[in-house]
Image (cartoon, helix red, strand yellow):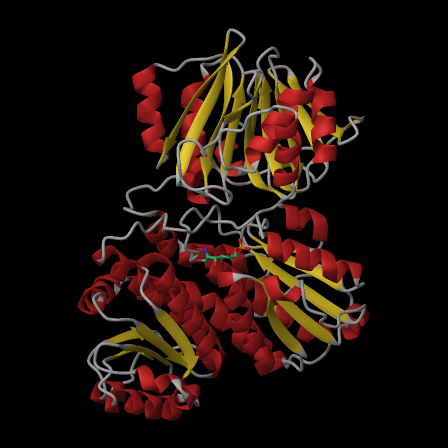
Length: 607
Ligand code: AGP
């Protein structure tokens, strides 16, 4: 949720920290702050709003130091005020802290310290940590942090400086944190992308682990203070991937990256009409026969990717699938055991609910697999078995290219399992494999219609809300289309299986509530047309996402976005880009902050 950046080395730290915070801004953007150590004194500046406001304040004040830490906040405890912004400094000005996560027993610690005469100045949970450190610190940072980590409960990535020490300390439980070292400089960040311009070899902090970062190197300890060795992980992303280039928004750039992303995702996994994941997955035919049930578990867009794939799987294999949102899965008593394959999908690999659901499934003995875009992310490290979506860093808060990469990997996975089980007909494998290889070019064709889609989006940008309708395979993409619109344009949008409308939601339809109908050329075409007619009879304008060559749809609406033709099972791959572009241009017409929509953060690392 929040973003953290820390630097210690030979250079003046403020610019490095501010640049790092700007790269983290998609994680939280309601307030920001920076603290440096300057000749043994803590100096800090905090401000409400964006990192650029902070940069202006830093420039005005001429803030300079030897090393420092910074934070961009997504408020959980305490409103959006300068006082609640991080860093927080202990009353004795000896300790300064930035924090991502939630300290669950903050109230208890605060009461205890207040009883001892310690004053508090903010409404945040974080202040309990820094005042506690100030209270127990006697010149030995490691001992103070051991005491702190033994005292606080909840989720935390904490970065700490002690005014009298030339070092940065970090500790982690439940919230992401990555550490790097290059030359005579040490770094820490919430996201590895912020470190790419300095190093590609990083240490992802594990739970119950702390580190001391100095210009000379990094040392790692457990929460009892015992040192241990730790392997670096090499990142194959490059710094240029985190730039917006000439696009006005990351979201638009990422939408346009989808043909390439899909090509990369297929690379090495499909060749000569055959699917092969054997170099990535350890399973034999015997192993997969054990998987009697398949649980897909994810949140948000990743959840809709699983719903999309689960339906595609049904077309070629006999799977007992269920798709669950992680925040429910983790609290329900859903039977999972050694005969269950649990597939966790998470772009970031840091979503707290998905991570906890994976821990639960593991504890029940289920076979677990993760599909993630971030190699080395917490869920990847904990689950082990993984398929990586090589989409590159996704910065826009609204997920786009990772959805396409996820459904690609998921469909390949289903085909591979069905093949190992002996269920995938060779002709189905060849037909779908070759159709999948053709999809990137078709995505590029759809992108050429961007201006037509923009035109339709502008026309409807003042609607009261939207319904997104689709049947069978088109229903999950409808859900994703509605989510995109809600997230970035703040318009109410609901997705329904089109046949369900008459069981209630149809009551809402009128001329101010347009319907976006997903109507590919498949065996549900006629039934979907009936649903379109039902909507039109209530005067709802209809925008159709139809397949090329479908002239008949023009009898019902002139607002048609055509996708190329593909195999019936694969239309979801083509339906999503028009919906992403539609949401993007509606939001743009409405003047919304597309890459950083209100109230949202890119990865939800708290419950
Ligand atoms: C998508 O546009 C959203 N930002 C959100 O729903 C996201 O997909 C969800 O939070 C899951 O994130 P993850 O894939 O990183 O786990």
